Length: 88
Image (cartoon, rainbow, N blue to C red):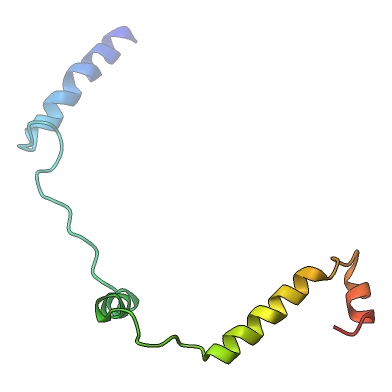
């Protein structure tokens, strides 16, 4: 058993060097993955810079912020049935 382990320990580096790679690793660099359509669109959006105006109108943004604030003023219901009973 010891002899076979010793033989294996000696043979592994020899087998690794047999392919012509001194370290046992390939010297070919890995190729970066091809860019996906989504990645190309994100890159184009990133390069186009910030928009002149926001995507939402100011009034729509203010209204949505008011609605969000109102949800935090109400207590969290104990169950979903309480939420449906209140009419929200």
